[in-house]
Amino acid sequence: MIIVGLDTSGPLASCAVLRDGSIVHLTAMNQGLTHSETIMPALDAAMEAAGLRCDQVDCFATVAGPGSFTGVRIGVCAAKGLAHAWNKSCARIDALEALAMNYQGFDGLACPILDARRGQVYCAAFDMAGGLPRRVLPDAAMELGAFVDSLPRDRRVVFLGDGLRVHAGRILEMRSDACIAPANLRDLRADAACLLAAARPEEWMEAQALTPIYLRAPQAERERKARLGMNEGK
Figure 1 (cartoon, one colour):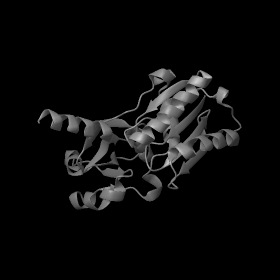
Figure 2 (cartoon, rainbow, N blue to C red):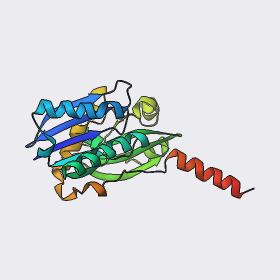
Figure 3 (cartoon, rainbow, N blue to C red):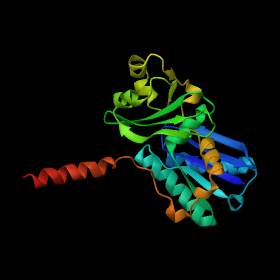
């Protein structure tokens, strides 16, 4: 089985190749360049380094959100285009679940948080003791304090994700027993997308069925609705 994983949903873009159960290539980039500039050259380099061609790939797995609206669309469109061109399957990977994979085997709850701006985080909680993530709290977009308050007090918790850049200090103020992931374990990488896709081949889909995972409407749509509401009130 050969799976190519893509992630452009957050600040770090990455590309990975899984072949016969092993990650044979991983590239992660956080250089301030736009993901549309970096992801396809990274894919080309990954395939060359792995000695593979796109027609040998069984599935193109992409992190479909939640995350940056523009970033999510880049990854989804790239995977759809590749899968359609080569008549291959796609896998739709949840960003928060893929993040939780960084703490596989942790005897507590992995609590990924992504900076959703506007005072909110994209968040979820997963029991990691059994290996693959077992969902404890669903994906949500909410205020950080509400999320932390929703977590059980009788379980160990580790927080990870790009939301830590903004919220790590506040998390420790609210919950002093929380673990904060170090820099090497807090970011999403495409190898996790490969592993989740390999574990659930029954969820693979045709390219045309691949859609983003949005927890709230894009900002442009929210602003449009706000303007319409103001106009209707006149």
